[in-house]
Image (cartoon, rainbow, N blue to C red):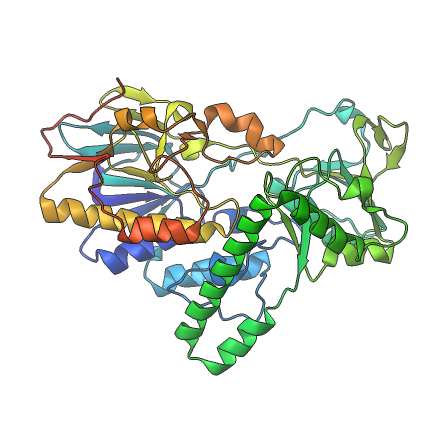
Length: 489
């Protein structure tokens, strides 16, 4: 039996739950369902269970603007975020709309019917007028597994943070964490609390910023103002400060890099020099900055329970890791924090009137829709700020589109792919230089260099565009059920 809804949301994580809440709020008459591949709500925040898992954005911006974050911690741990998502789904009645265990494998658009037909792995079929993909941008099945020579020789345990064994006992053990990104800098201080020794082994360093886990100004504002108003004020403050911080760093990269190194140097023990361990070869924000709340990484380094090594791996050995410098790192456990395996559209095979849609060939319109692909949006957040800031804007924009279609009697909307030809050189929609992103770039949708075919990474500009800009902007085409969707020419 086929179930039909107006809107089908794929994914019941932070983005999908937020999208459902916005749809109910803005278009209460719409029918919808949320298809979730796993058996529970939470997405990333349920999947990742490694020690110390936390946000690297403040919860006033990572949380929903319509549901104030009440915890005193501005930088929250994973279980607290998971509880927040689940309680939001329950409070807004979203849970009843979620179909668990429904992994979407295929979705095909029919212009004659003006609808999507969506198939799941276990044979269920849904049809919908609008398909909203909120399933993230990486594979849930496996992270990136680097090919380390001698892996099979290692006598201890090798784990990837994406699939952390709940029974793993690292107390009193020697642990080597391979990586220098957000996951590695989160794991090291958490493991160091009970492990005998934790070594962060990096091929190249990242920029690291320490900030308080509590926001003292936010606490004062929340003490003075009503809850909802205080949340809006603190959220606005953090948006403006974060935007200025990012823009200054991009405009003055050398000064920014020097300032970051100076702050790091002040927190390191004498035994650990800034160079080479904290001097990246790229400018700030060519890769995402790593946040360490309350300087926990530096406290672990100063305690002597953790250290950092910058070198290349020659091979794994029975007792640890042999480095190209000739040094060896003994280990009982090796953690490969080597990144995610990026997948566009949740790995769903898309087609329009029988024409297969290849993710790597698509141009993103407003970072949300795609040329020649009707009534479909992909929820992608910011890489330079809180994911939810942009995810929520995208959900509000989808609601605007649906309302516009209804008011004008249209069956579908689609960005004109011909317009993308003049948008400049294509580049990945996730435009960072991290290794795991560069590996996946050929298979990711592209952005251009001009509006509306570019991701601006600027919440204030995107807010004005997606909340106030014209829906009928000359690029978005509208049609009725009998109309044909414009395709690439």
